Image 1: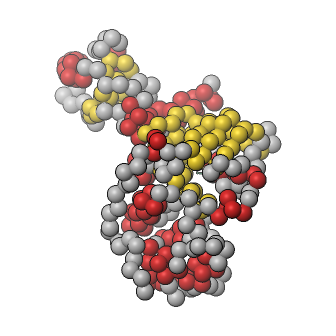
Image 2: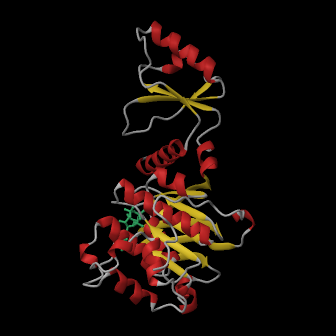
Image 3: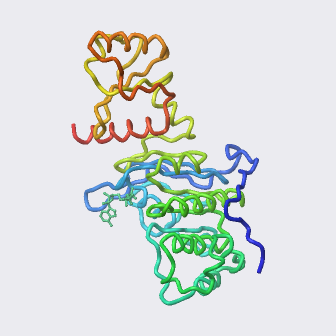
Length: 331
Ligand SMILES: Nc1ncnc2c1ncn2[C@@H]1O[C@H](COP(=O)(O)OP(=O)(O)OP(=O)(O)O)[C@@H](O)[C@H]1O
């Protein structure tokens, strides 16, 4: 048996290549997909460079899967330009398909076959597949090679899906919600595999609604809601786009505008569905907090519950953009 390519717990570091200098592997402009009179994807633009790990981040029903399915050529678009590895996925050429690896959202059923038989079978479609034993070890199924797939746990089935998706040594890997439903350990293993694809130089696009997944894995992410791409950037850029300076949050105790002038700190829109929280964005956090503490004491509060002062994060941007998109629909 060949040695495992990736030992459990092993770390692999990103390549030194700067994706900003690499050619575009995905170019999408004005993409639209209608189901009847409903637009699941609405005027979406996207560019992904060779070697990048790109996360399409958004809530349920945002249009992530539809976009991914169009990129891999299993769904026709209504309008827009799409190029993946220099070709229109709608043309579905065999050579092109061989360069694409897909791990769909739902775990596949592999009848009564063993793990080894499944990988052998899918590998036989390609001219230069990763050898079955090597791939089985790579996805951490070494002890299950002879097991029938029906006996695998959810996490093990997901790893088999990944193996099937990459057996042909794809230049591009698409993973649709790769870790939904996995326990924390299986989730970490799936993350390691994505890091491994990066090491191999593959371009990777994954969809997720987990912010930590995008933060851990992706070079860049696009936040998508109601079929529209709301913003795209590196994880750091997305954090900063929530606003400069610092964010001060605490459980709401009254109208903070009595205490803090608008030129010192901007009051952010509350995020619905959360405990009523006041959030202020400011370049002068110390001064603002001093005013807040005095104001709270004057109003009989010795503590500002839940007080935090932090730099804007991906989560701040995400929650605000999703909320804004929702508000626009409701108004
Ligand atoms: N075949 C279809 N016919 C009609 N509407 C559809 C179809 N497929 C998806 N939709 C709708 O299009 C919208 C986008 O769905 P999509 O599956 O792309 O979202 P998603 O972001 O991947 O969500 P999830 O995380 O729940 O998979 C949803 O409102 C969904 O109900």
